[in-house]
Image (cartoon, rainbow, N blue to C red; front, top):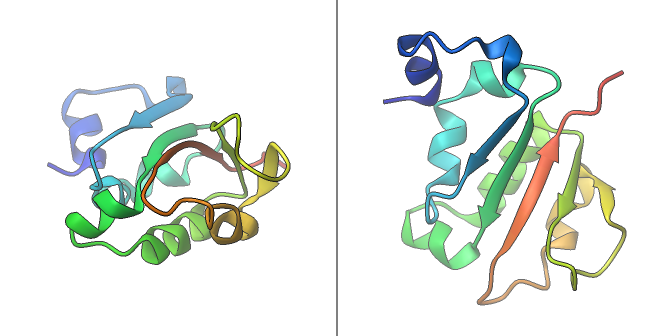
Length: 115
């Protein structure tokens, strides 16, 4: 079931949603594909695991997920305390920021900065 459909089915008050966590072992891109309405809502922070290896096993390229995120969010935070670079970064820097991940993973917070 698509996330947007699930939210409607459960009659979740989307105005009260401020945080969404997804850890789907490489299927994060699938979740995003099923949540265009929730992704469009301002003020929602998304946490996701970013694992190039798991994404590829699930049939998605990491670059495609990065491109999708760049079309939705304005900023991100890499939760790895050893990640290089600034803590809060513009989403356009996401691909560059994740180069350090070869066979590893990290958790990201992604959000749209409110105007």
